[in-house]
Length: 118
Image: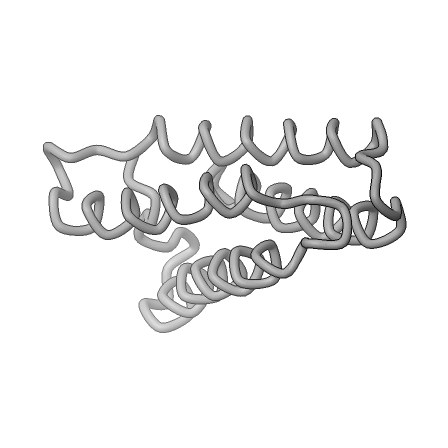
């Protein structure tokens, strides 16, 4: 069973990959597609951020808060011809997703511990 955070992470990475491609192809002007994809990226990241539970998992939530803040800034700074910061965000989020998957496999559970606490 895949949890909603995993699905959101998957969608976020896919959206940012598409945004990166669109920004690279759009020359010097923002295309409507690039704007939409970056907006969707903000929304998906916001959904993950809203699920942080500082009461149940304060240390984990603090680390993820910093990671998500970095991601918000990088998405906000993405520009046509300047999608390099998205590369870092994509790598960070891909590694977060991989860590969640590996934790699930390591524990032999059908559900991994939430890396984005609910």
